[in-house]
Amino acid sequence: MNDFSSQTIAAGAEPAGATGESGSRKIGDVILEVKNISLRFGGVRALTDISFDVREHEIRSIIGPNGAGKSSMLNCINGVYTPTEGTITFRGRTFSHMNSRQVAEMGVARTFQNLALFKGMSVLDNIMSGRNLKIKSNLFLQALRIGPAQAEEIRHREFVEHIIDFLEIQAHRKTPVGQLPYGLQKRVDLGRALAMQPQVLLLDEPMAGMNVEEKQDMSRFILDVNDEFGTTIVLIEHDMGVVMDISDRVVVLDYGRKIGDGAPEDVRANEDVIRAYLGAGH
Image (cartoon, rainbow, N blue to C red; front, side, top):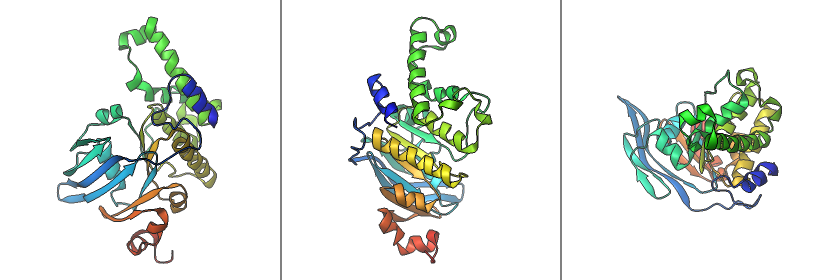
């Protein structure tokens, strides 16, 4: 796992927020703050007065039953939805709304619950598409692949090759994504987000539909991204075993309202959470 980190740093393209030393992760100050966010669609309230923060380098999970508003919350953070009320503060800058491009340019990447990969394109080209915001050459020079544009493309492809090695999908680099098993497609989706070199990575149910072995692999990659590169992660996940094992803090939503927030062991013991989500038997 250390190859990606060392090669990337040596190439002068250290992932944003990297600690520079494997295993030296230290949770820092608040990097992202959601304050009094409400979201309505006509007369339907998707979110009501939600507030929580995310600290640099931590894994912050959002859990709750289906329809609790988890994905809507991520959509507000990364600019897909405009909150009806409230603000989002990222690295000290406060916004009532940002569009998705602004969010990406500021260093926030997102994977989605439903895969949106280019199924006819190779693994390499799918992950390469995550470098679009980093490419400086204009489309004309890119098409001709001459001069600085060619050198730039080579640098970006080298970076993507490191991601492919890190995610252990070297054998599939030229395979059309649509031909891969579902678990590997999820890994490619993660790779495309990592190609943006995000400071904050939003993961919307990255393990949905996976078997036990695939979940173990994905958990390992998430922990390595967080630990080795120091990338801050906001995670939506239904598997409570995974959430409790890898999260630093957990926020719980139910019917668009926050009913719990804290360390995994505190959330596990919260009576409101037990009734709404875990079930009395737990």
